[in-house]
Length: 450
Image 1 (tube, one colour):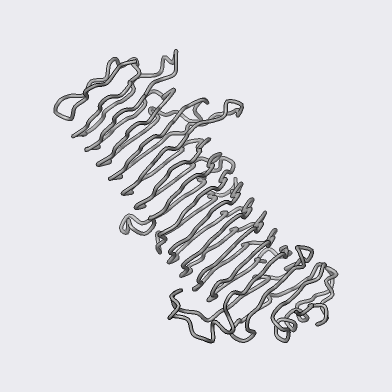
Image 2: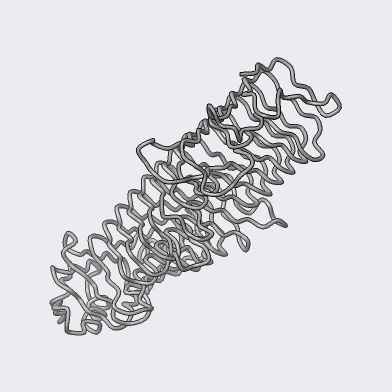
């Protein structure tokens, strides 16, 4: 292994070690060990893997720190792979010199407004383990083309830009696991203008990625209005923030003229909340939302529009009564088709943040099933159907809060609706009286008024 101090690096936090560290990268044996210390650099440590060969950067159990006092990324890893992850698409030279660059057990701290942590392009199997990046602009920045990226047990914390930035990258097989990605003002994880397949975001703490002065904030943002992202999971994470203007915990943005751009995704087993919208999905296809505990969608818990083939499973939308404050937690579907909502429990236990006329809104939708759900303490109305057709509401319990004089009805039908089936539900009586469904727009057999 190569001890960077053997190449003249001081690690005293005052001496500019850029030249010494660059020399160690060029002339060392590939395993660069940073002993305990603070290594000040003034420009990126550029690492073209084709020239320098296999490389591993080791911060001696987290005792070493790189202080980036210039613009750009402290570590810039550059590979030459330009094809897929299929074994036949790799040259012998890439396997010999470029595969599996690793960075582990080191801290990177920004000392410049445009300082970034780690920038990776054209790399095969880059692996970051136990890395701390803070007070930079972007933490981990992926661009161009990469394959088989692993981020494990990292802390991407308190940066002015984006924690993990997938920036116009062609990238397959990505795993972000066991990380803290918090207090990054522009987003925790952000994808923009990329071509991505197979991304797993699992077991992370993704929190407080917001800027109260910005127009919008998001913990996890997939912006696919230019590009595509398919095949992945957001599973077993804690994703929460602070109510922010235009904020969302998880936001998918597809394009109306390309509704298949983002999807084939599972959002499962997460704790999500404390933001203006918890889940904000636009122009998606084949998204499964199940097994999540969702709380404090200050305006909406779920907002889904212009989407198709959406499964909303057995989620809880609720609060611990010990938590104070207001939260609306409305569920909104607009201009969607082929949607199943099954086993959802929506229980309003706090006063609404903003005025609403219904707990669940289904507008301009087609082929929607709402089955075996509970809407408890409904706001004004439980479910409002507007300009929708082929909708089934069955085997549900929908009721207002005891003594709530503003509660009007369990179900309301507005606009041009047709082919509705409302059957075998417990429906709480409101000020509008018993639920009636005109025969020309559907049937309502077997309901019980409560």
